[in-house]
Image 1 (tube, rainbow, N blue to C red):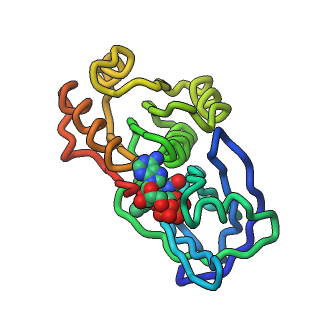
Image 2: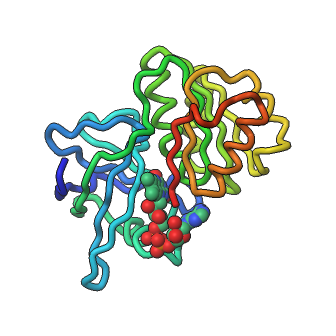
Length: 212
Ligand SMILES: Cc1cc2nc3c(=O)[nH]c(=O)nc-3n(C[C@H](O)[C@H](O)[C@H](O)COP(=O)(O)OP(=O)(O)OC[C@H]3O[C@@H](n4cnc5c(N)ncnc54)[C@H](O)[C@@H]3O)c2cc1C
């Protein structure tokens, strides 16, 4: 898809300072959970672009992005004010760290990284696979979808503590098998890689996306 204007279908609050934007998929738009799009907004006459990762399991009809709203930020508060029917400009999809039909997925997510975590886990379960989500946040978002994933057989660990020296995380990672994905801001990626290494995983094998 090349710089396309698309309609917002809905904007939902899915956690403290976190929204999920459902956007209409343009014709022939295909993307996998974990890939990201570039969203462009115009604020005070200035065009601003930021990247957001797919948080829906597929792009059939619509797709979703999950945005952590930084009140001091430029684009995220603007996105939070959008309403159904508004138009946004989107490019993409981009990225190489996405779900490719792996039978077993292990997703480590920090903050808004929970978006790709739920998208990938839902898709893996729908495809008959297995999923584990390890999610660090002081104020967790997407709790309903995480509970549904657990009911569907996924392992879900939610923590507000650092990932290292964290018994629940260490226990889960020690028995985790499959493709590891890591999504979040730089400090989370670093902590996740440390937790992976200390539980016998090679972080070079992870599919990882640094949010900045
Ligand atoms: C490949 C990629 C994928 C991304 N996917 C997502 C996504 O799915 N959801 C999402 O919410 N964001 C995602 N981001 C980050 C997003 O593009 C913006 O940087 C973010 O929304 C802040 O934009 P802003 O204009 O509101 O704030 P800005 O005006 O850019 O200022 C905010 C500053 O703080 C940083 N920042 C904001 N929150 C945090 C945090 N919790 N920890 C550390 N630094 C922080 C930003 O990187 C930026 O430097 C992604 C970034 C990249 C590069």
